[in-house]
Amino acid sequence: MTITEIQEEIIDEFSMFDDWMERYEYIIELGKSLPIISDQYKLDENLIKGCQSKVWLYSELDTDKIKYTADSDAILTKGIVALLLRVFSGQKPMDILSTETTFIDAIGLKEHLSPTRANGLVSMVKQIKMYAIAQQTKLTD
Image (cartoon, rainbow, N blue to C red):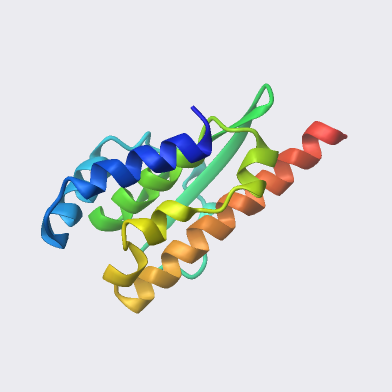
């Protein structure tokens, strides 16, 4: 699936919920299925700066696609990062860099987060894209 198709799928899923309490519960459920980062990557260098909670994010190149793994010490944040990994993990670095994260605004996620969590969300997307730049560099070397 392309990044755009995955984002459209997420938008459709969130349209099934009537209110934000149901959406929060769904996000928390998604966090439980997050492919957890190996303890060996739970290092300070893999912590995302700008997040209120601790969020570790690691990427590795698998042929020409990036696989991301992550974890967080907060259940809602874990769900948010699970959504992001669903969109970006398994994609080519250039596709990650050239695609806007439209689903975040389409489902109203950022406006329903506290300001510190919304900043954390922006930081997570930024770090995912930074890893894509680093991995793209490896592909072109």
